[in-house]
Image 1: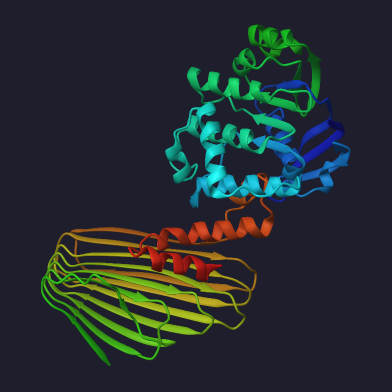
Image 2 (image 1 turned 90 degrees about the vertical axis):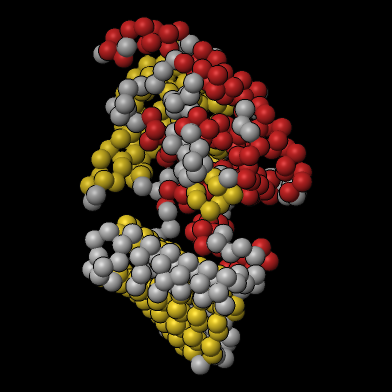
Length: 249
Length: 233
């Protein structure tokens, strides 16, 4: 589904370029759950944002193939329409924009790309209410401005709600577990597990093993200094949690 | 000049709409009087003087979204204690050579008076707008509250926005808040929308509506608010 080869990416910081990803390779098959773990500054979030199409990165070299297409030739909205979804580590507040309007606009754009008819307000509401129950968000959140005044946990649940509504093919969860209490973590874990199927892949970017206790990964990668330095099965996550990243050096 | 007097203790249920042909107004609010003045398609150049007596309450709403050049001057005198005024405005210039000028002068001449100004503006293409707000607090008045905020979004390299907040305060006992920003659309929010599949132009439009919404929500009349939202499209 996603095949990354020798990816080099820098970040623009003032007028200077700082290399972040140094020849990263990653291959994710449909039906699998991958986790990327690594210390702060290893480039995990850069990878997640770069794949979603954020502008302030500089592509240097390499290849990223997503479902047979050159991902890097696509605009962020085209990537989303093809089924790529990034759950943001820090979801953005959008004052003055109603959450329900935002969610329905997003869904209808993605539906349009799939050749499906748009959902009217009533049909959307039925669907949204059902999925809000899954993530444990009260319906009142539909009538508030996008993420404005939401707690950290509520923002993360709103991200997961978007994932459930948009039904993407590749789900990238960027530190979705950070700032979540145990109950929220369980709800999020359940929602993500509900998305697991043979046609979909999930990439969990995280510092900790917490979410991986609920969503068992098929492959765990360790990232350091912009490269994947070790890959293994789920026991690698347990080992990291016990010994820290130091044991790999 | 058109003269309007709102008698003591009267609350006007409907807004006073500025006429497209009247260029000068003098409006007086008596004690405990309350009214809303709505400027939606006023004369291209107009001047308004508002005098407020004790405990009167005035809301001035301005939605300047048309295509003409506009020059508006609003002078408010808070003469009686506990008089309160709120000026909320949304200004949109988008055509080359289009120019909107707004001058707001508020004089706090009695104690316990309040003024609240929230003006938002959007400038596109080679259009220009000027926002000048001056608040004067007389000496020897007490317990004054002044809030002044102006926020502008500039959508093109050629558009120009001038904002000149001015506070002339000769009293000590006042609570004053002031904010002025000029910038682009929030790039993080734009990316967030696009990452959810919303195309660039639609995403920009959503953010502009969101920006304007804070002012639109000040309108108590839902049909009028709906009309303003339509205008924005």
